[in-house]
Image (cartoon, rainbow, N blue to C red; front, side):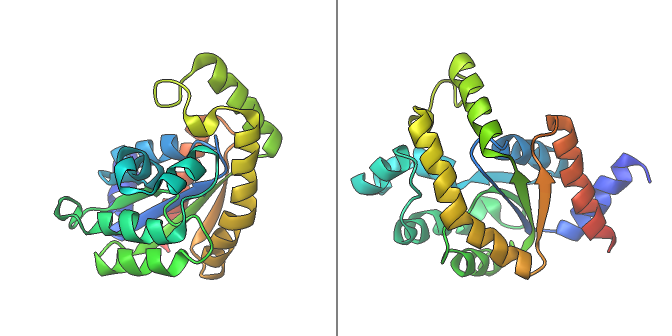
Length: 211
């Protein structure tokens, strides 16, 4: 099957549904999401970007916690992030999401909101990376300052990054396991070259589209 035919098949299967991408810090979530959205003609949405670009809507406590590597409180996530999906500009479009609903207890509100706005969760991709590799990538990012044009506050120190890893292990992995029990979650080795990671993601989408 030609590549164009594969993409056409994936798009047909995905419709206006959504793909949610999870992973530890520096696993390459936003890179994968950006590429997938370009290939599939989908909208890329990052809950982190929504939080950072709408900081005035969040409490000072939430902003402080986010900058220190702790996840945004669930109530503020539900009140501010989830309504974003009701925007008219997203109507009828497929979505590629970067870690939307990262805390235990946010699974059902996230899934139900996406269903409400006709963007049902079709696939959850889990980018796996070891703690040592996360810290190695963080050190490189500190040197070249390539995160959002510099160094983000939630990447400022190794202590904060380690806290973010712990947050993922304690709060987000149960979310990933929830999707796995529903048969929606597929693991991707994020330690591979970016091109191979992207290809594995596309292969997973194609597998589901053919099933």
